[in-house]
Image (tube, rainbow, N blue to C red; front, top):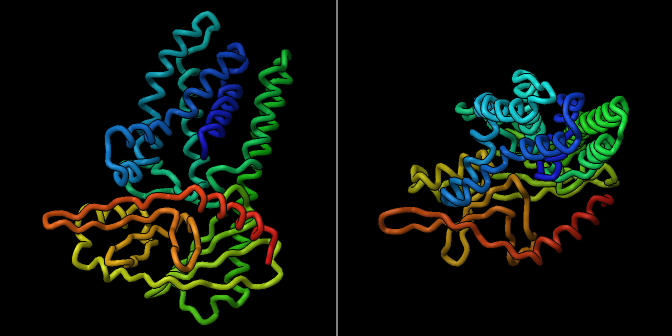
Length: 334
């Protein structure tokens, strides 16, 4: 999820675990700071790795249980020493730090990208039921945190905080129910009757859980469609040939293997003006103009005499703004 949400969740867990022991300003400090530490892997990737490797390591080691166990040992020492006058025991500080970190990853598991919670194993956990920014999750949590931080009575602080946590957590499970409802709807409304589907992915579009994107994989093509809970008719299905054979001669190159792994095999290969492009389907389109179709994440494959490299296609902010306008309209149904 976004950094603001993770910081707020961190404060909520900090309040729940240490709120009876320390003052509110310290609750906020520890929660917000520790709650955003895992996402510092973005900066590590930016400073020390190439863009594609940086994407590959995101939510890997930094979001794993192993990392949390070690980091909690260090941070708990610091907190228990700093709060020694408040008699915060080491084990209490350790529990607080570990749960702040763990809930960061548990929340991220519900998003499209998921996490490698059990790193070094490559299995990435991803329920894909919530977008990385969802106000309906963040706002109740934020309200609970604000009320708890400004309340002078301990019992009310805990009640406000717990209420925010319960509402936001219930909403997470609601998103899973909405996802499965959308899945069953598209599987039985006839849009895929003439298609032999090998695998189907259902995930929310930006900032909502009303409009869902569906990616279905066939033998030679991907089928992309969407479904809004306000739809009155079946949405069309768009077909995108895989063209994976275009990478046959370079599929063992490191950069190609990285891209395939990152995309979770949901990719197409296109050729335009003699240039080869690798298109990651998981995050949809930046624009759907037939004359200049562009996926949100697309890479130009550059074949040099002695190596193969990839360059991410630049994004136009105007396309993003137009896409959001189209999204707002599409949510309302067809």
